[in-house]
Image 1: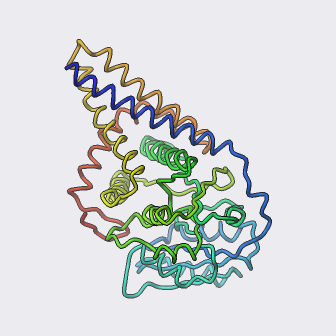
Image 2 (image 1 turned 90 degrees about the horizontal axis):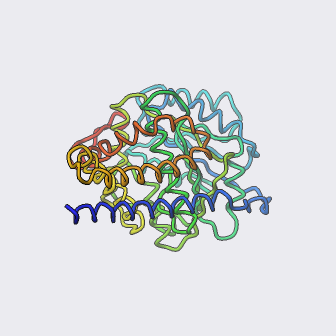
Image 3 (image 1 turned 120 degrees about the horizontal axis):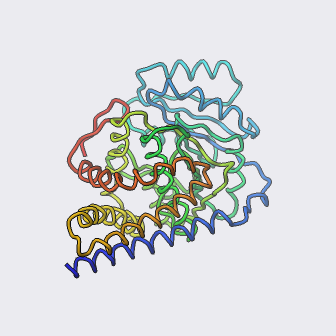
Length: 374
């Protein structure tokens, strides 16, 4: 038993050191002086939005782009319809008629998927800077301004913060805390000039660099276009920058039902087997291993009285470092209310992550009315 405990202690120590690394990086990036003010040039930007059955969201997204604090002559909106079967196209066409924005709506024909929609949108784009977001996102008023000011010098990809809209309840708070952890990891590691995560809901990059790395990956996955493009940019030594600014946060919708939430996470997890970045594989693995370990710690506390104290110490060490990271990130995103659910989420999370990991290797899932078998 003492050897098993030693392994438990070692894994927990590695996990804690990993989170300390992320915490230091996040603090440094958040505290770094914003150099964007040195650049006053306005670049032309192509905003690409792939859509499929987004009748409930697309209008608000377009309104947030209409209200941008940016010259309308300096950006275009390219919307790619991925075979929507609802009123999405009609809503977009009505918006085009009612407004003087430079908007283009194109349909996908022989192909489908978000990746193909983005690829087609880039082919149709007229400008050098590509900015992507999703139809269920709300963009801050200075979003385009921040993107323009960051693309100077050697920057070829810009990572932006994303968070779920604030709402009540356990499911919403669970998703918010999970997203806060992901954002903490994304920007914490990015500070050390070795980014491992990004999010297409707030992502910008040079069209020239995109073409230079031969575009998107060739994996047959419904998700991952953003991360795999990041890996290709890294492999080709393209400079990638992360911007932590509250005025740059993109808000998106959390899932309202457990079924939709699980389908979303299965879709996200389906791409992990294609990861090639060693740092990403390390952090993904240590999170998974630590959560598997938590299941054994829970059992050990209740069944092995002799070592219960040691196991409780390991439990609280893990909880403490998680709380420090989440508090730090939640403070930046103004989502500290979700921390009221910290303990119940901590109890449930190991079960959730183990089940999602197993399910992603055995079950099919649905996304936008399409069924995928991974």
